[in-house]
Length: 444
Ligand SMILES: Cc1ncc(COP(=O)(O)O)c(C=O)c1O
Image (tube, rainbow, N blue to C red):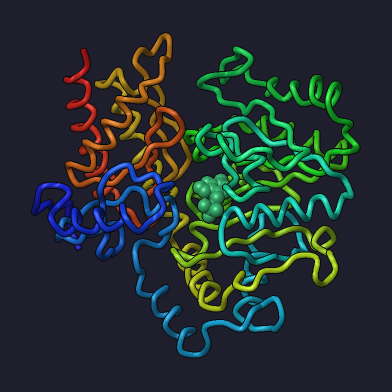
């Protein structure tokens, strides 16, 4: 598949018909930014039901890490499917799950030995980590960050502090959760610049939360995204994670890193936290770990994950077909795709930064590897958020054959498959350039 190549007006007739049926049969809670109806995919391309081919810089929200339907992943799925589809790893044993636990232990961003808990999604991986932290420490409270996204089930949702629509109408939330500011250098909560950042925003935890609201010996864990994903692809300085590690170690709290979006090679290292040298106690994964099959994992040091049988389990979690897809995915990541994310990511980042020269609308470009965010602002000085313009740029990209998604209130995220080539990255940036030009021309 090559492209982008558009054949019909968008949405085309077949897409329109499916969207009309969707409106009657499917939950209204999903956020569909534009009318893309997928028929098939190959590598970094996605074709819609009317035969229009798009360059996909979403990878289904950072999931299709090895590209759409990588032949090696499909072969592993088919092979496992012929043997057996399910036997519940909760009640029985099967080798693909054991092997995946072993392989995750070999790459985990902290010293072993490790054990892994298998679930079906990012939110479930985080639920497991939260329950484990409470169980292991015998403490109740958890600290998370403003702007965080950890999932939408009731435990994770209590930690999620990204968009109000995700919380409004669903309270009360699980008790014992406190939020602190995240080190967003573009909008520093304490007015520092990135060069002078000493993660002073963490003083809020030490001098406010742990003084006025909760005793440190009653905090089970701090959960943090190494790079905030849904929050706007926000990359904190390393010192932020370093100080979090010091703080948690000092008070006997667990440090849980949520690598659901930033993990599995996307940033040019297997885990984004590896860029900081910080070693967490627990790491959670999902999205890109199985190239599109549902799988979530919480991996912890073995001495922490020693809860007795029956304390936590899942019928489908660690399904053998998902484990087989994950083993094939990890092999592809190790054998070149993590490196490709680093190399093509650096190229794409440089090209994206170049857009700042000609587009005042682009206030900031940041990220690591193929996890790249562009924050749009109406004025670079006031940093007024250009939310409407961001939405318009996303639509203009779609109209030109490029799939991108928003992140946070006013950022665009580029989270393509890790098979992306430099030429495809150039095509994506070229389309983004045109979209920005078109939206800027329409501004008053
Ligand atoms: C960092 C992070 N954690 C957790 C989740 C939740 O994952 P899921 O939608 O698979 O439940 C997401 C999803 O976007 C995420 O980005």
